Image (cartoon, rainbow over all chains, first blue to last red):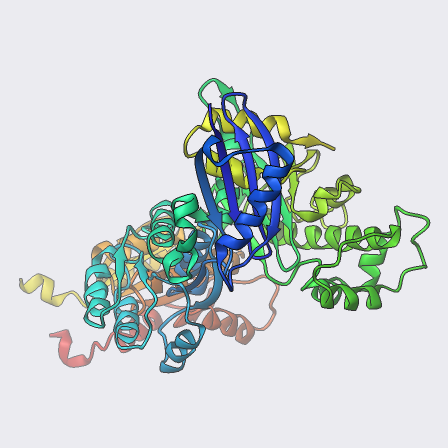
Length: 467
Length: 147
């Protein structure tokens, strides 16, 4: 039986994972620098050659290729809603869950300046929402009229008030925009419905956006690029958590992905309150939730981690290593890393700096992702209020991304994303087991889930390394 | 037809959140009905969504929220935002009762709730007549309409 190649056109690297489905085994992994600016297939060819050298694959052996992409800036999306903490947030949740990169968020009515700003951003996709079903119609219709009259050429998805969607569609189409209407992302105030929007985003990505970005050059080699990379990771996470018929999953889980520019956190968990007397506040959260911290990354944004956490906090994380304490000039190190984004640690202290920065990023990113609990006191007693997801009972935390591939102190980095007595209000896992996706195959498993979920799951379970 | 023309407006009333103090709003409801308003009474333990759904169904002119347990701020937070999403941005929001236990000055409490989007904020000592007069003013019900 032939090989399956899972390919990811990343912003920095093009990765290829060769899988023998009949043996349920990963045969080889290779990567090469991405070449989006010239010809995306060049980087792929290099990666394939490297793979071929290590495992000796022949083109004829390849039975199937599946590809994802976050190259060319990722799926750049602008979300436009009505109330910031309601439909706009619902739109953001859906967009992030589809693997999009939010490059702009607007609430309430758009002003002419807002429209100019969106024109300047020139997003790959615009997600227009607003109003619950039967709720506000005015804002989404007015926004559609403004966008329809704009110079924007981005395709658009409408996922707002059902009663206003078709009028909004007509207004956009009158301005020659390409528009798709799907079910409301917030049909009721207490019901978040991200799936139809997620599907529409993925569809738009596959059919239109990859062409617009020139990624379709790869099509002759790999077929359609079927989803944005972060969506593949989230699909992999869902499969790993839920399992399939006859092959159990690992149960609810969290995945942290520490990159050079961003830190992503995925949770596949309901996150309902653990006790009956806890009241929930705020918008319901998606079961498969992804957050992206655009200010936390251990290269481009190393300086930003330092600004947010402060030198002391980062240095405290070096305390596990006696050799490091007092010897490292954190400011200088961070300046160096943010200017040398390709830097790969060689010396002991460089590893330590990366580990302390990554731990700090994981700490902040998981606090932003997880819910929190607050005690409010009244004459009648204490009321406990939960915002967001309660992830304390989660037993599985997985690390993916470069920092975990080094295999240095992964436990330390992942532990930073757990329950901590100094911030007990943050509802993070109390006593989980830690795993790493050492070979970086989670995206491949997400892609493979499309064709053979049970095999994909068994491969993932085998390749997850407990730390 | 004549009977409905005489209705000055439709009002949603209820006690918000984990609160069983019903008497205050019952007194007001009685007075409002006598004054010619249609009152849709939701009773105790009313959630924000209950208020909004009832207002949507009945095309209400105002929502009157009662709270006597002292945690009104937590319970009523975000109600205005939800009204906006639900297409009820023009529906008047009133709140009254023991609204805060930690603010000694009424002016501070009133300011807090106005910032939360409430049009009228009443202390526990408010008499029904004042609420009726405010409703008539806010809903544009002049003397001439009273027949």
